[in-house]
Amino acid sequence: MSSPDLPSNDAVAGHIRRAGARATPARIRVMQLLHAAPTALSHNEIELALGAPAIDRVTLYRVLDWLVESGLAHRNADVHRVFRFSASVAGEHTTHIHFRCEHCGGVFCLDAAPPAAPSLPAGFTLSRMDFDLRGRCAHCAGTKQ
Image (tube, rainbow, N blue to C red; front, side, top):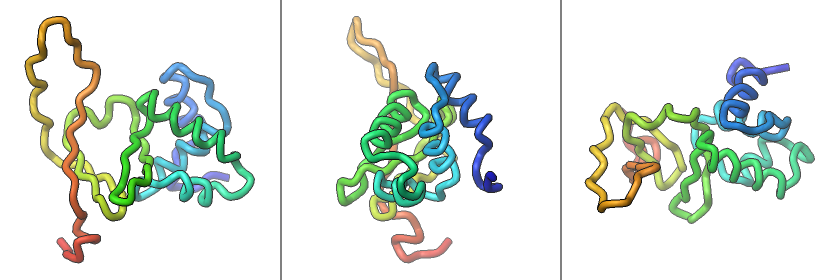
């Protein structure tokens, strides 16, 4: 049974296949969880959310690494140097800037275009450009908007 907050197995499997890989049950479950999560999750939080023994620890590390390498997830370290993961559909986050809360790990899309790529020396090619602002979100800073 699927939750209304989770994208369907078929939708997630389609994203994975378009990234050029097999849509394994482990990849589908992790992607569904990342899409439904309100903030970025640590490896341990993902493990706990999936429940034991849903996916063994090594498989989960491999799934997360593959999702990041394929562009389907983001990985960023929080203030405690713990990697946190959030979902991304390839190409969906290339036209704006992100604000990353260094306290809770939340990733917030800002309504601002990223700056233009700098001129590169001859022979260089740009494959990716990330632009993140970091600080504390309104909740973690104790302010309300």
